[in-house]
Length: 307
Image (cartoon, rainbow, N blue to C red):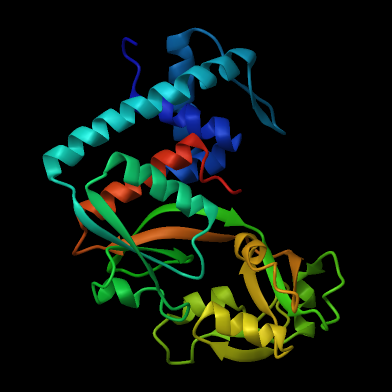
């Protein structure tokens, strides 16, 4: 262990999951070259390559596979020990109010379980926040942190871990012409009225509303505007009534796929949707920061990687 840095181990764990230096850098908030540097340093200390790199792919060597299987549980145990000491020192306890939009999917539920196991004196309260107002509950101090759809460009808020990268899906009525399709191209959104979020002067910022319901296709063609909604359930109800179509991430679509009046069709050519954990820059609570750390650790462990 002489000389090995925790950051080198973290770089290897994230790269082993992503198998892509660029995405590993994004996850760690460092450059691609920094990930490569950390890996080379670790390999130098071990004395053999852990990763095979070519111009087309990245994969673990047999030694890398073996090292990964033994490192993960040891790394997790170390982080739990450190976090338990931090919790004692900071007195982390009391309620942690987590805002969320739509549904709590399996990925977020796993992160909550990790946090509750590590901080049994900190009770979690889940608070659903309106789809049309992703940041208001934080600013009114109704929640300590919130899981929201990206993008987030608010100067008074901190964007922490980003996770649940998912392809986008179009929710349409079973009577819609797209309902029987295996997929639709992003340019075909010109053939449907896209349900939007909130009003033109609503609490959600314009850039955020446009990301959830773009007014133009990637090729620049205008997308017809449908009705505006404040909640996910309103949007799904309108889509089921054939009053428009609504873009959703795949996880949300899978959760609501039991509705017989709706069809969920993958959309090809749009950026993936992502979730991010945010909290207020001026009022960061210790439990919220500890939850962010738990999410990060779960990401490294691969439990939140719905990618």
